[in-house]
Image 1 (cartoon, rainbow, N blue to C red):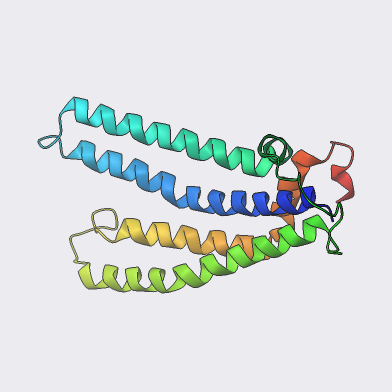
Image 2 (cartoon, rainbow, N blue to C red):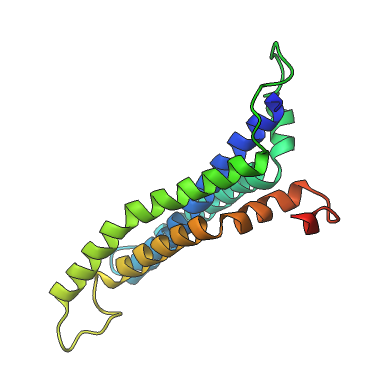
Length: 183
């Protein structure tokens, strides 16, 4: 394994972690904007526009960093000169790149499941505590947290069970179209 491939693996792991964070963070930003808009008496249209602008800029930066970490890894390594200055050209690690990525995807999925299962159970408990006969699921304040924690839990399960599919999607950009069928 060369230093370049080691840095490529590390950057792709960071990209996967950012992707998982984006799945949670971007909907929360949109929800914040919509709830701020719902309080029309407290916010002027200028305030609403400023918040929407900053959320949009944040989402664009987040997606750009995630895209470069996952799909433009070689370009990022070249621009940051990460593979320069090593005394040895080869590092003695006999693990294939996709195997390391698969392990990272499985570990990230496990962390998501372990983090979100207690949160999901707590939110379901709070939902049943606060539920009243005349209040539906949409009107209950804890229902949005149930949906978010449920989605994060199942995304973690998907990452654990379909790690090869996720790694193939990431590696497809690096390999040519003719080599994709061999995986």
